[in-house]
Structure formats: structure tokens, C-alpha cells
Amino acid sequence: MASMPPEASIEPPGGHEESHFNLRAYVWFIVIFVLAGAAIHVIVWVSYAALIGGVPVRPVSPIAEQTPRPPEPRQQGSFIHAATPREDLAAMRAEEQRILNGYGWVDRQAGLARIPIARAMELTLERGVSAGRAVSSPVATQPVGGVTQTRPAHTTTSTRSD
Image (cartoon, rainbow, N blue to C red):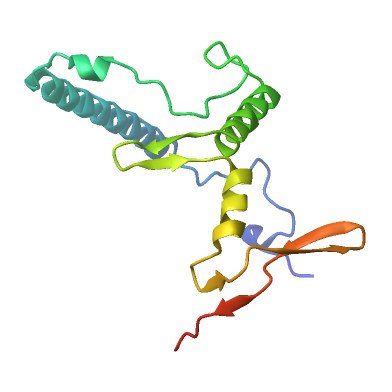
């Protein structure tokens, strides 16, 4: 058998594979990257200092120093608003009942007063409804199923042209 030249031997050469990594280029990249980052930080800091230094500080307005209270409803159960939701609901319903069942002025200068709702319903039944319907006689009551039902005895309706 013919002898083979040494370059064409089947056995791999001894040692290790040479690296294609260029350490010098990698170090230069890191150095330039860090220097560029530092330069950018210095430029931004100098720009900020120049902008802040050129703006005069104005005194704060006394109106801006006042902190207005937020509008109702405020957070319940706090030191500002100690009532619980149940207490607030009860107070709201009591106020509504006072308005519905009592007399009072809505606009005194205009002569507009508030009357109890029960009295307003009685007056409406006595005088009739004038918005589209008029009641000719006061009322006719008829017991229906154990409940007394009140309704107008005779009503007239107005005709509308649409």
C-alpha cells in the first residue's frame, strides 16, 4: 500500500481547536460602550443643571397652598367622615321623608311652596289633573278585592295631532 502524505492522515492533529474569538476587539467594544454611556450621562446632567439654574423659583401662591376638601361623598369611616353607610342612608331617608311630609318654601321670592305629598294627592284628586286630562267630578271609590280603589269618575282626554 502506498504511503499517505502527512496532511491527509485520518487521525486529527493533536491539541485543541483554535478559537475565532478576537479578545482585543471585544475589549475595545466594551471600553467604547462604557465611555459612551458615561459621556451621555455627563451631557444630560450638565443640560439639566443648566436648565434648572436658568429658571427662577417663583413663590407658591397662597391659593395653591390651600388644600380644598373633596366633595361629598367622602370615604366613610375616616376621621373626616365618621358616619357609616347605614347611618348615612338613614339620615338621607329621614331628610327625604321630612321634605315629602312637611311644609316649606322652595322659592319664597317666587311664592313657590312645598306641601306634604299626601295633601298634594288630595288636592290633585279634588281639583283634577289639567295636563292633558280634566276630572269632571271629584272621585268615585269602589272596593275591589278588599282594597278600596280610588279613580276619577269621568275623564276627558285632549286630542293631540302628531
